[in-house]
Image (cartoon, rainbow, N blue to C red):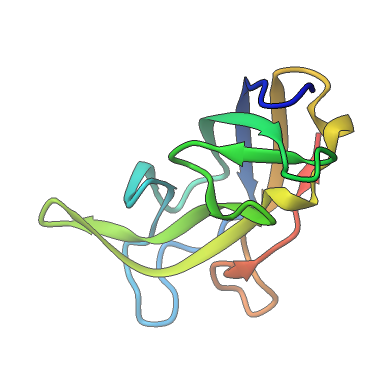
Length: 141
């Protein structure tokens, strides 16, 4: 890309291997994606899989070598951009969360973005059988 040129990509996040609907004292667990400060596109567990979609703007980073993701779904610094998936549930018109997972976009390079679509798959259950949290790996499809 040249200079401050931007394009929009569609991010599709496929969540598989979801945990049970109750875990660690939490019942009726939901999963959503964070847009700005709000959790949206929430789905109630138990389900086989979930798909979230988000539009991201992308431009070059300050060094002109790597993609820099922008928009309400992109969080973090330009050097460490990520998308949050949030565990919790809606309650009284608000999201009550207990855990989040970071999908680090900063690990992506321009080869991952040849088209205006980026499809990734995330395994959402940790080694203890609960909802994955902190930073986790994903597969680019």
